[in-house]
Image (cartoon, rainbow, N blue to C red):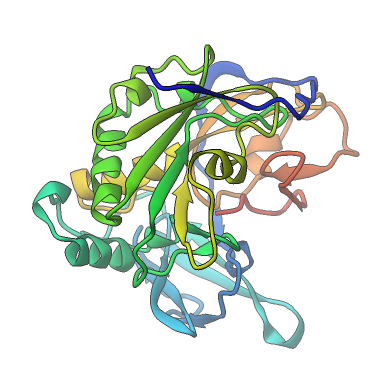
Length: 320
């Protein structure tokens, strides 16, 4: 067994409203992709209002990196391109048609592909933006060769979801996602677990990764802290990182040949009537999640955790 990395400084903040271990599947009429979710992205549109799209249809690309494409999480119609000051694009809103039609990107075994073929598939499908780069937490540059890729299998933030529970039943997709990531670096893929807390076989039976064990309070689950203790970033170094849910979405692309943006999220907090897990598509409207599910009308709604998430209003959409 590897040595346990002990984080001594920190604090676990105890808050009421932890999610019960049950899942409700929720669909909605309205979804949105928000360019503001991505650092240093200047969107240029492929579509216009009224256009029909499928899950995986291209919506916009980055003006300064035209190969970075962003795609629709659902099939339906582009209902509105919501703009702010100086016509800045804030949201591409999509009215879902309930048909769940997908663009086909082709089934493929990542172990039989080279790095360029894997990268092209991730870029074309719009899944590449799930991979982030340190320093700066920007979308990874596909032309770079990172010295390592990091995945944290636990989150130590207050009321954070249980990744053991989230990945249950998705072992094949998770392993396929890891096989993809191994093609993107000549270094190691690090899978970081929490000692005596992480239990899932999905993580411990993963192949082709280095499993690192951590213990201690928050911020033990922060990817930056983990990178610092395993393989610090020196001048000129680049590392990539992502979370287990994103690894599963990548794996599905190669196993199923489509962009399936389904993920499991936790709705938590002391003002939630029944805090538990929901199976949703990326960018879902928060309305069906909070409707008749809050104890008070005067609450903040945060997409992400309470320490680093973003406040959204009741008519808003979950972040990417």
